[in-house]
Image (cartoon, rainbow, N blue to C red):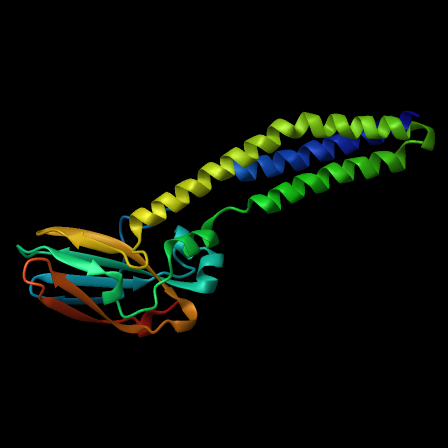
Length: 235
């Protein structure tokens, strides 16, 4: 019986270690950013006191857009617009010569996986039940079930915390993505003597490294078109 008691302790230690690992990986703060403070741009062009800088985002960039799931479907591009003129300009999604993905679709590739972690928690509970049932003698099956139930109940707070933390982080990712990206049918205004940095997510299968980008003067409706060439800088 002493041996069975020792094994039960080991099982509970493994169970709580598993829950602890899932909890801390779920609650750990993510240090990545959407747009870094400093960036080296791959392409720069200038006209009428407007300067456009652009760069592709790849695996080497430690940002949210460089996540593996995002890069599998989309090609993120960071665009910086420096308006050194006295006019306001508008950049609309339709005036970028790329097939742009919606922010909602892109956000799905950046969110932390809740179903995976919940499935892992369930597997740990099943592991404790099966292990206890196999170690304890048949006449103590009820005790094994009771101990497994105690294990599940003791880890319920961890489960709810994991759900809360991941939900909070996913909501933050979606909010930041909307703030820093151009959505389908979206637009941004570049005020006089100001600078704007924005992300664009091109559908990867349709991505062309050479494309046109047009700004519209908000007063005269005059278009300024820039030829962006990122062909030599894909990563």
